[in-house]
Image (cartoon, rainbow, N blue to C red):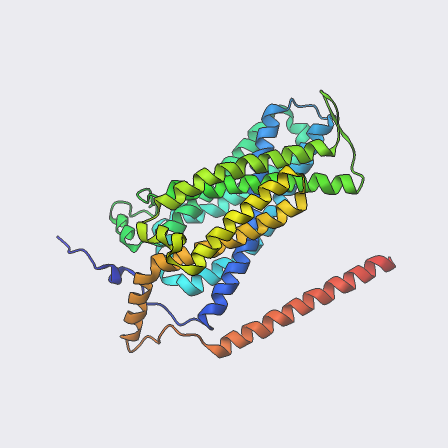
Length: 381
């Protein structure tokens, strides 16, 4: 019988990182928040679109159906942005935690590679829903249902990898699932973490619907009329805020479940054991209450701003939790690298970091210049 390998032997030796650790942590946090905002709009609006399709009889000339179609048409647009903005945080994650994310991704490779197919099929599903609404007729609900199901599977795969990379002890499950289909079912926080993310996306989707209606009302959008009489954009705002409010209330329950499902030392990080984690937790609760009060007062933009702030704080809490969970393994892998003469220590390379910053600034300046030129040419035309 082959003896079990120590956990330190399961974690690859880390490579040097091309810059100071803190730089990449900050970039990971910022880019992940942007990606998360777009993904929340995609999943949340998709779920709400499905429910609106289920409860609204199809009629191609009905303005409520037109509003459902036009709202759904934003999903593939937001999805394209979410995919593009998802690349930077994934790259920064690989730079900082490559010795953890690569093994976990390989162990569940079938599901991980399947993400590409899930996203593409969901994208075309919502694209078809928006453009072929009249052609689909009542079948629009089936198309929306399949697309939402694909997004939910995609979210579950991402949640699995996010938890599997944190616990190398579970990598030994490869022996029972050597075909790249390993899922982290034994992790107590898997389901509450997943539901916490999904319901949070529904809340953001509700805000998106309310914000879109607010903008259309301000810019003179058409008045919607349905089978129950004239309905202006205020009713769309009310509908969006209801979705946001109900989903946010559910988050208190799911968030508590998620917190209590963590190992004791991790839970205590947010109960006074870690200054940044506890502070972010308290501010997040305050921001959530502010968002709920603003929604009750129909102050859509204040609720949106508070929600964006809460998402940023939650991303910071996620980063603290990840580092605390990985600390023993990260320290062991760095010690192993230091003890291996042929492997350089995991330290920053300032020259590469400086080149990256210069390239980033130059790229932003070039894009800004192109935007200015394009706007000028548009005005002249």
